[in-house]
Image (tube, helix red, strand yellow):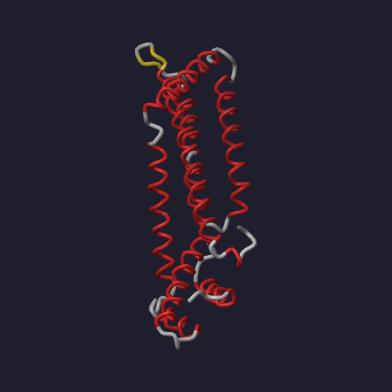
Length: 230
C-alpha cells in the first residue's frame, strides 16, 4: 500500500521535528519510515495510517529517529571518505602518471624562469591562489544552493583541506629560500611535486562532490512532489 502525498508530508513533518536539517538525511529516514509504514498497512489491512505511524515511531525506541540519523550521518561520512580516497588514488595509474610528471616538469621549469626575477615566488604563489580562488568560488556558489545537503557539506570539507597544499608550498618557499642539496635545487623539486598533488586533490574533491550531489538528487526525486528544489 502506497502512502499518499498528505501522509508522506505528515511523516516528513515528524522527521523534521526531531532530525537534522540536511535534506538527504531526512530523505533517507523518510524512505525507511515510509516503507515500514507501508509494509505494516499491507500486512494488516485493518491498520490505518495513524496507527501504523505510531507503531513505526515506537519501533525506534526512546531515542526516536535520532538513532537512525546518527547511523545515516556516520555512514555517509565513511562512504564519501572511501569515495574520496578511491578518486584520489585512481590518478596514480599509468594513463595519468605521464600527465602529472609533465605538470611537475613544467612547474620546475617555470620556477627556473622566475628564479632571477624580483618577487618571483610571490608572483608564483599569487597565481596559485587566484586559480584556487576561482575553483572555490565556482564550487561554493553551487554549494550555497545545496547547503542543506550533507553530501555536499562533506565534500566541501575535503576541498577546504586542499588549502593545506598551498600553505605547505608557501612555507617551503619562505623557510627554505631555494635550498639546494649537492647543487640540486631541492626547493624547486619539492614544489614541483606538490603542484601535481594539489591538482589531484582538488579534482578528487570535485569528483566526490559531484557524485554526492547526483546521489542526493536521485533520492530527492523519489519524493519530488514535496520539494521545489530538485
